[in-house]
Image (cartoon, rainbow, N blue to C red; front, side, top):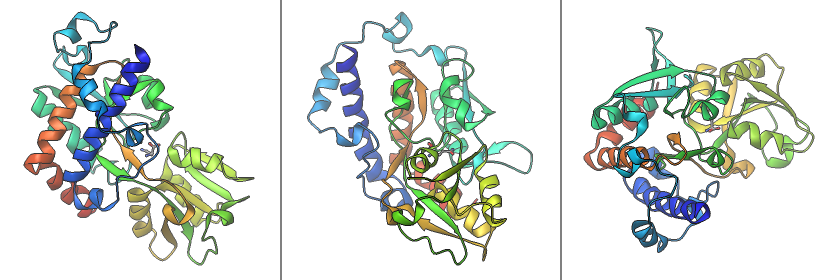
Length: 297
Ligand code: GLN
């Protein structure tokens, strides 16, 4: 039953990914939906009918059978993020988390009629905190099979890829060149996982990608591997000192960001996906992309 369920979930994700890509902002739509990091991307279309006919999972509790999510029962959606990932999340001038993801989850909360409370945490602690300290996490988080062992994901809302930040004048230009290099990453991120697979690489893990970029500028690292949009923000912050190069040049695969939710909370997944879908259809989503991502930090 569990296995069947996960196949169904993957199929539903896939369908929604297709829809999401059709409607997402220019930046998001510009990259083809060829991601291979998730099961979803590899699942075929016909499975959707199975998903619609499927019986509810045995372990679903009464609240979920009634279409209610326990996470929303108190009227508050507790959201975890790591506000060190511009333009998706950063700390604003008032010391509050802001950014595309924060605006997105607040808009979702409004549609669901719940108050959204955002908690700023270490990125590496988010997945384990879901269903405990926080209800959901939004943090430019890539859907990976490993994380899917612990949490479920909403439909993907953004396509991304890892970038390689290099000091100006670096000769690193292809995957081969990364071997044996001193590489900075943010702890527990997909950039970290990629770096750890590079032969003889000396990987330094930071809690903030910005600290890695500072070490790069100071000559302590050969490169930093981090997601595209933050990489572009850092490139402009350190203009003339670093260059951000598309990871496709190094053979890195496309990734998809989604909201992570407690495993098995299908009622919450449905509600979040419904709100996301509405925002993609009514232009709210594209407006947020224009404001936060295309318009800069
Ligand atoms: N997308 C990357 C991941 O999920 C990095 C996210 C982040 O640092 N906030 O691992």
